[in-house]
Image 1 (spheres, rainbow, N blue to C red):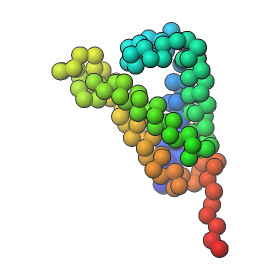
Image 2 (cartoon, rainbow, N blue to C red):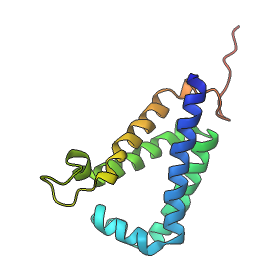
Image 3 (cartoon, rainbow, N blue to C red):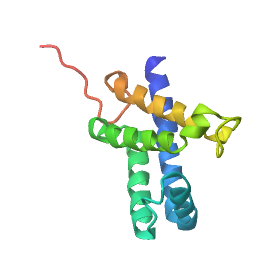
Image 4 (cartoon, rainbow, N blue to C red):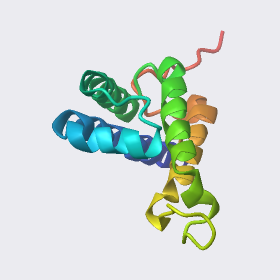
Length: 138
């Protein structure tokens, strides 16, 4: 059950990265609006967002199949952590009772970050990844 659970978690988080990446590639205006609205415009240049979309799509596909996890889980944590920080109001006050600009639909960002932490922490137990190596007893 543990191996299947990690596989399902890896596929679902990877798919989210693919969807976010393709959205940046297919709808740069939306990506610009997100960058301006949640990340202080730090990435608000079409070429930067297209490159980031391509890298994010690659990251998502790699996570799905379990490729280079020791290297690629770090950027996964950075992206999901930055997303969580970008919507911090929605995590602290999901219904906007105190903080303006909250949206209950963004609350799952903390769950996605937690899922990424679980993937990173238990990658040795994820035996259904293509980069998994069986331990040999000598």
